[in-house]
Image (cartoon, rainbow over all chains, first blue to last red; front, side):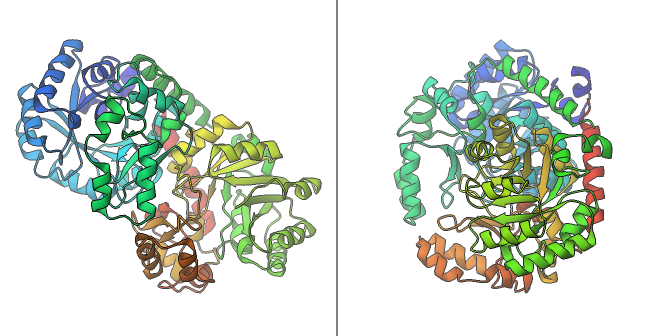
Length: 317
Length: 317
């Protein structure tokens, strides 16, 4: 099956065996995770959003020491170090960038001049069209069910993927609600050419998230995540004391400023990297309810591919 | 392909050629729509939620005059006429009931005594388990993207279907975000044994909705529906003046009582049956953005089946 996938457009573009991209996640996706995914035939992404430019440089070198296969960097464009992070990654030889949070229009110039493949993350088909016009090579369409920061339109993967496939000619990568081979098959049925998977890779041996965070993901059940802070910066979080407080403020009609004050800084770090399950921000997707173990990445890749084949077999009439 | 589908468990249970169920929708799904879907090999459902028991009886007779094939009734259990409506439908010989809004535990006794097939609509896997324990023959799992009244958990079809498939042994029917053959294929990939489709059938020649409403669905684009009234009774509505007013109240932190007062009564009737696009409630799913014509039901059925086959073909590695 490797050859059949490898000959497809998205795999050719990224130089990978399988159209499975590990989403760049703050505090979870460093060198170990990205290298493991790339080694297993997918595309690993280092999440630059929680790293200083120096740390990013170190992580890129470390990833390269762990794998000869292609990997990339996820760069949130609204992130304060975005430009420095981009320069470091370019200097270190990274040529695959997944950009998010913001418009790709300004960032794409220097990336394309350096010969990079640029993929932007969108939550609506209008932005997918803008990405294509700006010169992006592909788009990630991330549905409402995805973890962490999310679009305001609340369009789910089931609806967003066909809308984006109809709107653009470049490859569409589905994200949000994908943790199993059956869900990967659903995404391909919808017209996506690949999938970007975050939550499932956050709960692996190689993820750099805190063990407490990984265990909280495993312990969570259906309906335990919610999209909150919609009037501020929408983010999907696992239930905990901090989220309950935020939701109580929202129910009282708190202003964006009040919400920002309660949010403070460092919540994502304390929750996901330091393991403070009460006061930290636990960013994870709705599929958290379907995740019940913490295996190595290679095992997840095997499950995705065999689950995909099983799903296709039972669909053949 | 008919025979392959027909031999599957859900089609045998319902006595239909294809596992395509037309969702029972207030003001849209009367005799003409239900009969057209059943005639085309799916299962038509008369939506009892907007009918007096007398009108329901008339619509059942009319449906029977239009088709010899099986059809059913959708019965919202919290609806004030629910018990009378059930009695009328039973007396008129209906033996397929899709129940929703409430627990099936009390209603299922008389229905099962009369030899009915009973399918309940759920928005979380815990309720799916309760339905199986209560003796339901199948469940409809309706995701966050579905139109009209909706669950509080906000679980999307992509996540809800695998959660329910893992939780119960009875057939799972996917609903929410399904208007095309590709979306039907995605639902089957997720493990559903059939699909329930509402919005796409609302915008057909045979739907009894007002022409203004159908045209509003066709004119709508991505992101134009939102789930509102979450603190009252969550409902997904198309953008219009009424919904803007409700959202402004919600942003101010209005109480459930204030929201109920502004809502008043008859909003769904005025919007969907009488065509008041400004002050009426326009219940439709997120897939509204993918609907751009008002064809006859038979054409929708053809598109669903051919779209399904195309999706499966491009998935075969």
